[in-house]
Amino acid sequence: MSYLWGTAIAALTVVVTTDATLHGMSVAGWSFAALVFCVLVFPLYLLVRKPRPVPAVRITRLPLSSARACRACGRVHAGVTDACPYCQAPQSS
Image (cartoon, rainbow, N blue to C red):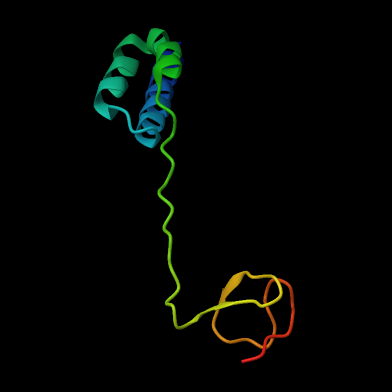
């Protein structure tokens, strides 16, 4: 029976450690608390955890020489093409 309790405590500690890492929280503090206080810490952790950080979006800009605006729809696309990739309108040089 003690084997099951040990496995449950270890699994709970792994879950809290992994989740704390993903949410940018103190991994050592929450892991220690989950290991020592087990069932009492898990609901508390779920209540106070931070939202998952949103990854930064990289914005790339086209060089002005390769950016072209469609004469039909006005959207900007890269390079010289025979037709607009958005509206398929023919493009002349």
